[in-house]
Length: 324
Image 1 (cartoon, rainbow, N blue to C red):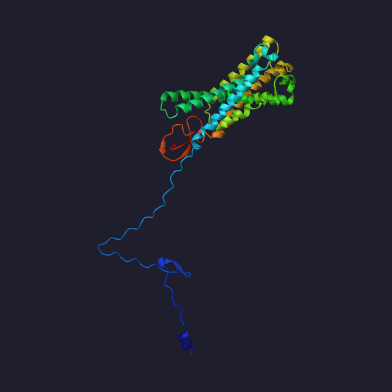
Image 2: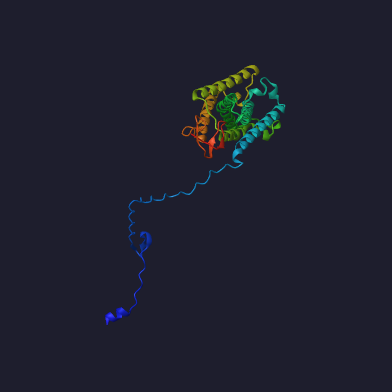
């Protein structure tokens, strides 16, 4: 009976084995052995795998080549603002401007002149770099390097430490007692916007300049010697004005004794040196020059990739060549 039942039951047709050695229903089917090469005919070598063609290098857009324009326009705008502040300040008729030394006995006015001259050099270097770019004139490039070196030296030694010193010391003393540094009587001569232009906007302007362009600092010994010379020179100038006129340039110097004045003058010199070191550390932190030096220092081109490189003029730009 069992044999009759098995004969009448239809059998399920068997599926052919999977091709290529794939698994069929959980079981691995072995690959069919390759036919041996015919005698006299070499075996065909395996076909190499073709990689998909790489996409062409991305061409920089029209705005990438104009990466320098915003920085140049910003420097020109800052220069015009300082010229406007200086003109408005000199137009004010104050009694202190008519005394010995005029406006040059105030560190705020000296700082405004320093900032205006510095940004003037920045604008001049930008114009020179745009005019000499691609000309291949070695003499022009050498002169441009000297101008850029002067710009970097002025920011490191004068623009940053003096500017930060004026802003910090003025507002600290102003918060303690404004009559010691900026009496209320001056509100009748100097408007509020002009006061902030002299004692506030200096700091953000100089920080923007440090962030947008790299500046090579001089050696630490020469930089500290230069800032000490400036500090001692201004202290001697203030003492000479007091010797001639019998009055101190700043009212708070009248309320402290000789010993306190010596301590104050010494503290200002130390603070100037600290601000110079702070500027150097901040510049290295922003641009990371200690670990990754700018590519224009001893660079040579080896490939044709579109990358952002650091140009000779202290700004970032899109280049068609990769420099190492």
